[in-house]
Length: 214
Image (cartoon, rainbow, N blue to C red; front, side, top):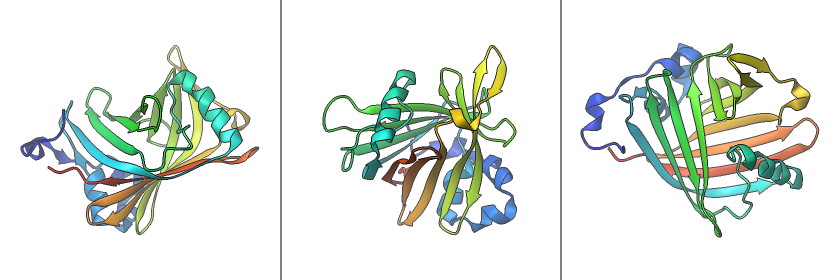
């Protein structure tokens, strides 16, 4: 369900990201970023951001890895020709797990759009985890700058029969950094960069979005 002109009545202040960063780091962020990550919707409500992919760079190793990951739902961008294609992000509050569902849709010149599903949960040793399905997850650490909020991978893990198994570094895909960069005038840039200790740069993607109209 998209937000309507009345949906702000069921939104409440959200201190989860603020608490993870700490007050001083939270206040470093631009007011628009604090507003986006400081509002908690009622359970089941969603906010939608529309935009387009503005930059994409993927190495041969990165493309091979991204295509292998399509077996578990394609959590990483794999289309090198995605620049100029539409992008949509939908964030839905999940009160059952005290987290959020994220759906990212990227258009393609040929074939069906790529759709990425993930669930952010405020849990684990770092306080924030992202699950992409099939028991695979990633612990995240937050970092604030004067114009961006970064989500940086701390480690990867596998959940099996209620047990959380931390993957060794040699089995991890690499260091993943996702950024939310404020551009002003209701616009922001979503950036993704993946770097492997063995293969070097694997991929990077930038998508520009506009604030949802309430």
